[in-house]
Image (cartoon, rainbow, N blue to C red; front, side):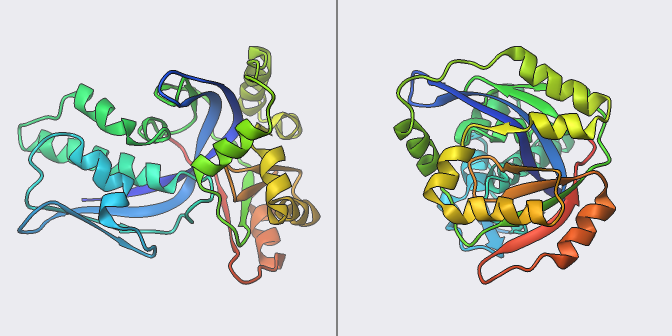
Length: 287
């Protein structure tokens, strides 16, 4: 059984106050991208195991292993292989998407075995990472609370192209939140609901220029201040012709928005990347 664990992109990301338990509340509009990791589930004698190709991740530190074992069911004889394409510490949700893909595969497998996994167990397992619940929902989605409240947004897939550029620095999510908190004097007020809805309306009507003007990420100013290469990456994407640019999640990858996929692909060909950098042209994926 093989599925793609899609990368994700936050088109709007508002980080609100700290919640009981030490997690931040967020409000975000997230879209899936057409590229991602390959996640394969197969049968193999022995204990449940997860291996990763293309990245050095210890099994017990892998969100996919954590999510699967948190289901609380017997997984003996099953093996997961993950072929990484999504860069780590980039804000593209690679680890969370891998975990969600494994949960989907296990749900499908046990359903065919006549022993369906209850939805409550899936929801509990998804709590291993704040982005895992969102990655369980395909297409565009609205994410609120600490990431556990997810609702599908019925939006068409825009024909826009994206050019992703990750500078030679990674930003751990926990560090991004620490830096954001340190730079604030108190709890951030929730921005008007109107701004979120206007972005959805721009996507609905394929208003590319309006959508670019409404892109927002609360992490962007502080991450660019601490990591100058992130600010430089945005400048390079602008110079390559991007009409809008945005930090991806908590960073460090940056997205450049182009009106067509052909324009993004052409910009990718001319973009020069240095040592430790990564870039790809992509677009939004359908549900």
